[in-house]
Each structure stands twice: as C-alpha cells, then as structure tokens.
Amino acid sequence: MKKLCKADSKEIGRCCQELLDAGSSPRYLCRKCARVALEKGRLCDPVKIKPSKKKK
Ligand SMILES: [Zn+2]
Image (cartoon, rainbow, N blue to C red; front, side, top):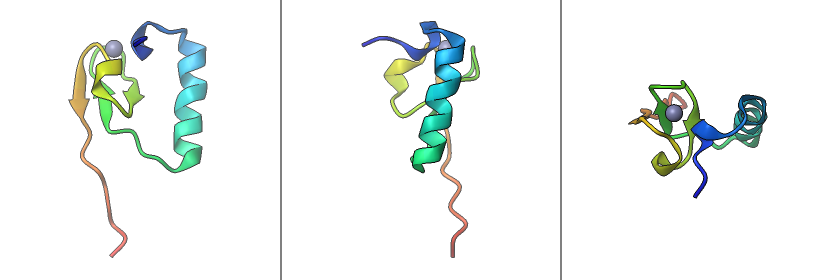
C-alpha cells in the first residue's frame, strides 16, 4: 500500500479536501508531515484523531 506521506503534496491536499467534502472524517494524523488518512497504515507516524461529535 502506498503511503500518503510519500505521495506528492499537492496530490495529498486534493485528497484531503475530497475526504472532507465527502463528509468522511479522517481518523489518523501523521505527526511527521501533518497529513490525515482513514487508515493508519498510510502514514509514517500516525496518531489517532479523536472524533469530534457534538451533534447532540
Ligand atoms: Zn507522514
């Protein structure tokens, strides 16, 4: 699986925006390159993002 961290940064930016637009919140953040992904395997130094649910 290709790691997002090693992909082109512009490409990543677009992917991130698509993720946000799609309404699916990323679950992991890379502490090294500050990128986000749905799967931690895609990042080189992933930390889990706590879901912010304030709908109630
Ligand atoms: Zn990374």
